[in-house]
Image (cartoon, rainbow, N blue to C red; front, side):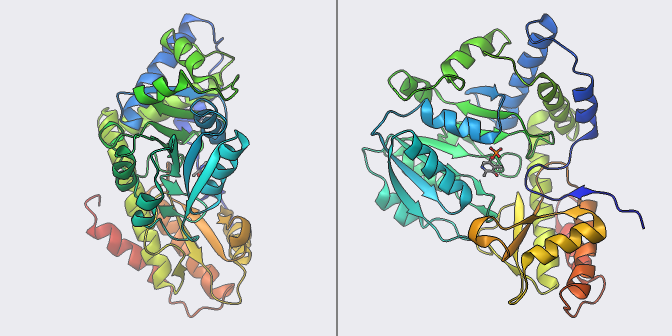
Length: 389
Ligand SMILES: *Cc1c(COP(=O)(O)O)cnc(C)c1O
């Protein structure tokens, strides 16, 4: 049988065909009126996609570039910061803030769980310059309660920096209402284009903090990018083709709600949430255990495999039999869990396909007592009961 390659990884995610065409056609120089018009249009769309009145900047780097910018531009050596860490990406915040000489206090949660808010409250000190967290911790597929953390941080005056790289497009945020000073996204996640762009919203409070922050920065100098962005330019050669693709993807998302990008963003988030819930129901019906049952993300689902099974065998079987690409666990979680994504260009029928394939793998690779249709039926129940059906 022929097998179509299907990406189910939480970044990179499947590409939107309209974005691929726009990228292929993006034969434009970046110091021209054509590019300036494109860049200004995409920046304005991104503000709506992020859902903020704050500035939104676009950088030519993977998501970690914007994470680094939010440390180098906002902190000085010896600044005390609080990092909330519950997985590999939380650990990246700790590494990054240490690399820029910050004194790092940590609130940790075990892999597969989210933070105890009482612990966060107790750890917050008036000396903290900034708090760094994820909206969704992609390595464990856990959703963190950004709204609740934002309430606690607001009382202290610290800056709140949120890595929303898989949170954007899968979580409803009220950026300005909650007081998120920096919210970071990446192109290879919910916005359906290849890796290579990061974007971030920056509050007035964060701009003010940059005036006194002394850590070194050059390529990721946000004040320089802001100045250039007003003119429709970036400081250095931008990833022009990706920006054209991003414009097409944001048009597509708006098109899901009759051209209204804000409503389209809400529909995209709801889409991820229904697909995630359907996937969880299907996998549980097959006898799998969810790795993050108490705070599951809509961006991705992490699944624990039965005792004595290596999750790599599931990943490999899905790839060789169905050309379906999933992600193994990262670090210590490798071999114990596998992850499937719902963020971006996934529809309900993709979920049905994944679960149909999982029934074959559960039966033939893992020897579970599978009745064909049981995972798919559980997902269909979730879909039918959702407002989106
Ligand atoms: C993908 C991802 C990143 C960014 O990684 P890059 O490889 O630099 O794009 C950061 N944080 C989270 C939560 C992610 O999912």
